[in-house]
Amino acid sequence: MKKYDTVIIGSGPAGLSAAVYLKRGGLDVCIIEKQGFSGGQILLTSIVENYLGFSSITGDALADKFFRQAHELGTDFLTDEAEKVDKNKVILKSGKSLLFDHLIIATGSSHKTLDVLGEKEFAAKGISYCALCDGAIFAGKEVIVIGGGDTALEEAFYLAKTCKKVTLIHRRSTLRASKILQNRFFSLNNTQFIANDEIKQFCGETTLNAVILKSGKRINTSGAFIAIGQNPQNNLIKDIVKLDNQGYIITDDYCKTSVSGIYAIGDIRSKNCRQIITAAADGVIAAHSILQ
Image (cartoon, rainbow, N blue to C red; front, side, top):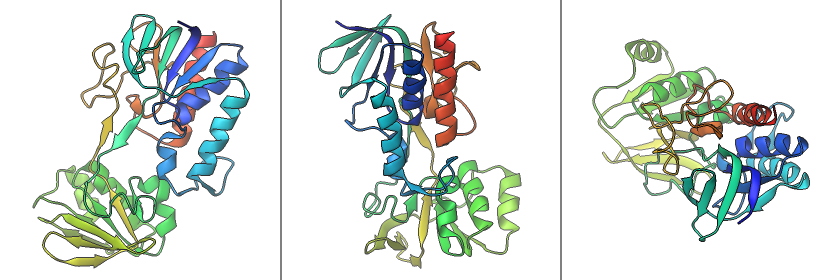
């Protein structure tokens, strides 16, 4: 049973960033990644245009750069799934176990999906889950936003600044978003609200060009932003560390959880901004704390 100074679970921007700083600090580091490839949700983004140093880069290319840097520094990568954390030990699905002095949870969160026809096919090909990440691609075009909460209204308002038209689609008659966000949305002259309807199918050839609603209505659109919430990937650790009311891991300013020696970074951490650059920053902060 091998022991590492630090075991990191998850190899998105947060986990890879932590590995780079820890390896440069001389520690023995292992990243556990169940997917067999690194990058996390960057891999769902066709073009990244808001990461410092790159005016435009594909999600795949940026993820590859992150991975290569961590790999070239000597980080061990293990394709396996962590099933249990027991004191200073991670038990893996394969039956193996790893010992650690420090554990970093970088399991991220996953966007809730609609699970309708065409959603998987057009992901990153017209379908997005983040207006801040991908909105600029659709400047001057007509787009739709699916959802009725604060996030959906914030996405719609952000998109309305640059898009020709933004249509908000919600399955209920009333929105759940705060009144101030609703007032802001309805005050715009390039927005539309469709209530009591849902997406039945996403349509297109190589990229999205329309959606069909359950009512039978067809809406031509260049982009669709799904904003119905996220699922924090907390199953491994939810009974060990403190979580907020949405299931994200609570940490202090140093990314320390309620349990000594365990850190949480990236999208799994309770915070108000989830972007590539903030995930990478979390990795730096946790690594710096461990190295002190």
